[in-house]
Length: 81
Image 1 (tube, rainbow, N blue to C red):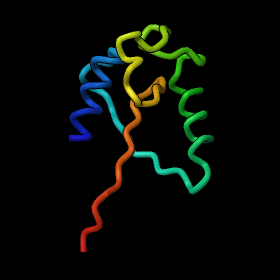
Image 2: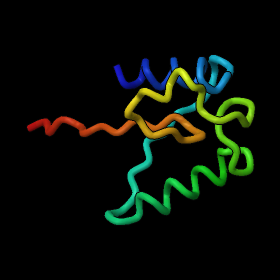
Image 3: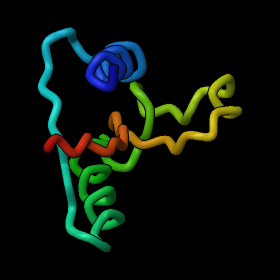
């Protein structure tokens, strides 16, 4: 379900073509904010957010999710024994 959500948000929110790459980033403990800043600087079109540099749409303001200039989903993998 997370992979499907990444695809949908990438295509619909950011206007990516349906062929793109997704990656899992796992920063070391305490380095998450530095990793997010580096990703935003690299992928955020010079600090602008949204598909055309626009801010988050007003209809999404009710969501409790944080907004980044890239798709970001947290997950905890299952521990398989």
